[in-house]
Length: 227
Image (cartoon, rainbow, N blue to C red; front, side, top):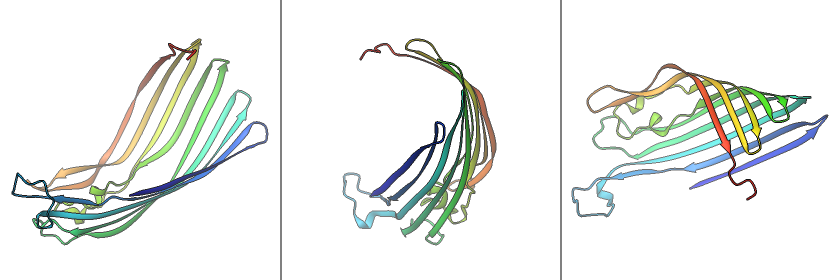
């Protein structure tokens, strides 16, 4: 069961500037249950065969604001975003093979993110663009309450964060043909991975940082422009 809404407002002001603000809300109820039966001929989910049962509710809220400033051929777009993620998780039925206590937690993460976009029009059909933005990876359910892990109660990895950089050139060299080439770099901090602690158990941890960089190139051609 899921509910959500997306509300945005845009205001044109000054000389061709545009202010945009909005909010997004989402509520998701994602229960998880597993049954195990010794009868391979049975397709029924009997209460006596339940291996574990979890109640998992997540609520997500975001407020954002950005403004497009135009200075002749140069466009500048600063942006700010605040996100709140709440997890309400409980093991209604714990895996009987585990010795730990059933987990019941209510945890909230708050993140404030910033970004900046730039674009300079070099001609009527080409432009140079660049952007800088912050991002993060929210926790997954199993990062907080893994039903098969003896060490799930000690799982407490920090949120992973990243800073993204890109600069590129886009051009419509001829009608119907668009070329795009860019350089990118992503600095990723506190990556979440799992380690094999014992033969049967794993633990989620922040394993370290990474950097990803490279060159992207794309060509788009509209074969049927009149349709």
